[in-house]
Length: 406
Image (cartoon, rainbow, N blue to C red):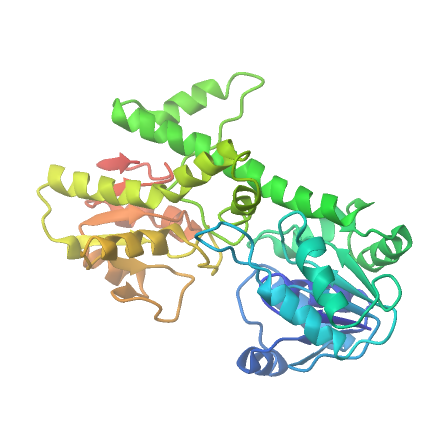
C-alpha cells in the first residue's frame, strides 16, 4: 500500500493515477476540509480528465484521510516555497511530513519525495532529520527523490506519458520505486542518484525561465524603440536553429517562477544569468502596469476604475492562481497607493479579490480598457465582444483594431 502525503495539484493526480492502475493507495492531507470534499466525491480543482480519473480511483478503492498510515511506501508531495530574501528553498513542509511519517512507518519503509527541491536538499535537510529521529538510512528507512514532471492543464496526459526520473543512492531501492511508477507511467523512467535527480528537475524549469526572460527582454527593448517584437520573433524563428518564445505579462505557477531561484540562492556567485533572467520575468507585471498608464494617457482615460484585467490564473484554461502575474500586478498597484482595477476570470468562481466579476458581459460593460493577461479560450472565442474597447493584448492573440501590445 502507498500513502500519498499532500493532496494538492501534484499529490492528488498522482494518488488517483496509481489507484486507477491497481495500486492500493491512501491519500493523506492535514486540510480537513479538502479531505472531506474528496470523501464526499468531489475533486478540489479543475483539470481536464481529472473527474474521470477520480471516479476510476474511487471505484478502485482509494481512500482519503488526515491520518498518516503504517505502510512500506510513502510519497511526499507537499509545497516547497523559497525564502524571498535568501532565495533558498524552504524545506520545512517536506521535513515536517518526513518526521510525521517516521512516527508511523515500519522498519525498511521507503519515503519518496516528489516535491521539487534544490540540489543537496535531501542530503542537507531530509537525511539529518531522519538521523535525528534515531533512524539508520538504508536499514530503518530508505530515501528516494522522484520529482514530478507535469503541468496544470495537461496533468492526466503527462502523468501517463512523460518520462520520469528516480533518484536513489541505493540502486536496488531505486529499481523498486521504478517498478511502482511503471504501473502507470508509459514514458522512460531513468534511475540515477538523488542529487542528480534534484538538479535535473530544477535545471528543466530554469531552462524554460531563462528562455522566457529572453523573449520578455526583447519585448522591453522593442517597446523602447518602437519596434514590433512579434514580427521580429516571427522572422528570427524562420532560421532553422532559432526558436524564440513569445513574451508575456510575467511568469506564474509553482515551477518556473520559483524553482530557478533555488539555484540563485545556493550558488549566488555563479548563477548570474539565472538571477538576471528571474528578475526580468519578475519585472514584467510592473512593465504591464506602466503600459496601462501609458495607454490611459494616450486615450485620455483618467479613471482607473474603467480598466479591467482579463484573467487571474497563471496560465490559460486552468484554475491555478499560484504566483499569477495578475496578482503580482495588483500587489504592485497597491504599493503605488492606487487601487480600482477590475478583474474577471472564467475559471475563478469564488471571490478572491476586490472588484472581481463573474460574468464576461458584465465585466466588459463596466470597462473601457481591457488588459488581456491570460489567453483563456473564452476570450479568443468571444473576441467580437471586445469591439469598441481599448485593448492591451499581452499575448498577441486579439485580431481587432485599437489593440496595443506590451
